[in-house]
Length: 142
Image (cartoon, rainbow, N blue to C red; front, side, top):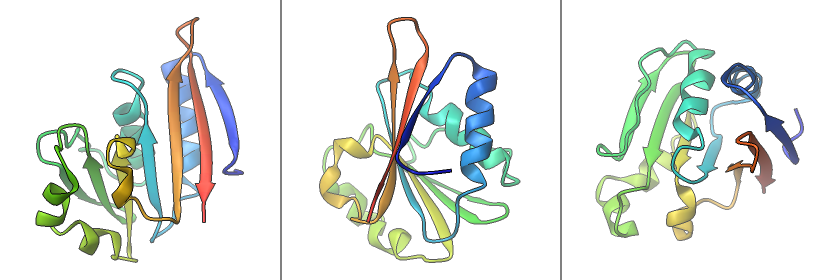
């Protein structure tokens, strides 16, 4: 899977297949940012990517800020949606999470606080198209 591509998705089953394929490419040290409006499927995509990695209890960390999971890898799942500023992240040790090279970090709504995002990351932007399909745009930053 190349990390500079886009794919139009027409169903939940296609999203699940894409999430599964994507999860096969993940490795410890990866940081993945998921951006998209409410209802585009960020958490749904993460839930099915992690299911492929042996994690079944995925929920949105909107109120907790971060959820931790252990399956094939240790996963940190952040949601920036309710954060007011970056200080809230640093109060919970955000840099320690990012510096854990034995884990994978997933961040929903990363575009809301771009100043804290690492230079090296994968970004997935999800857009709802006029025909209600989803367009997934994958980009890699080094």
